[in-house]
Length: 92
Image 1: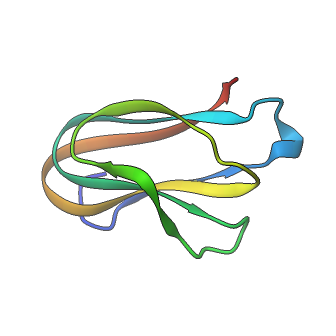
Image 2: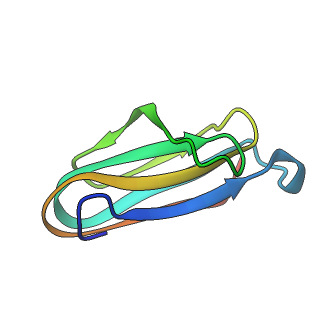
């Protein structure tokens, strides 16, 4: 992501298709900016900022969706550099 409002995702998390109740969310790279983790009800496209999901530095965390949802990263403020966002299924 190298611009304001750039998006990574959505990752479609569906409980019926995975034995895992959490995903790993990662943001890495060298950048100056703010990136938010957002969720939406499945296939609705109405995005809500996650309360613990605003970052100005690289991070790797376990995120528990709580139910079926879509997950994405969005750049809310950008100055410079490149950030790479990822959502990876497979954490327990």
